Image 1 (cartoon, rainbow, N blue to C red):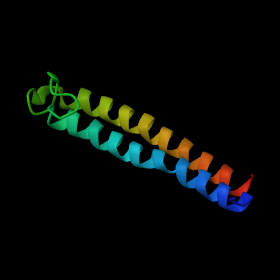
Image 2 (cartoon, one colour):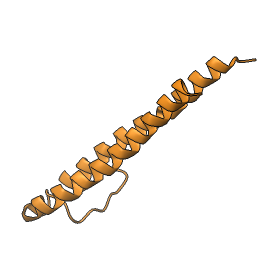
Image 3 (cartoon, helix red, strand yellow):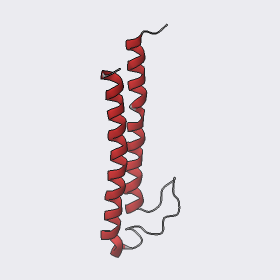
Image 4 (cartoon, rainbow, N blue to C red):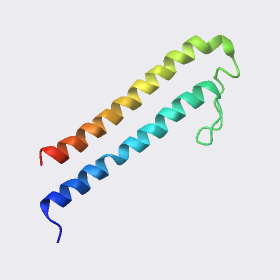
Length: 87
């Protein structure tokens, strides 16, 4: 049977898996904003590649998407540290 310390380490490791998901999300935010066509969202009519005059507006949306995705990553990291050092 696993001891308490080993279970805490497993829990903290599982909580950091969300960081990989956040990295994929950040990559998708900027690839959709610039290229407009990814495997996840094949139809994206508003992108810098299709309409360069919308670059300023789309950059704002990309920064907002980046900030929200990064907030999720920081929340997951905080949960991992709480699991690791508090419990």
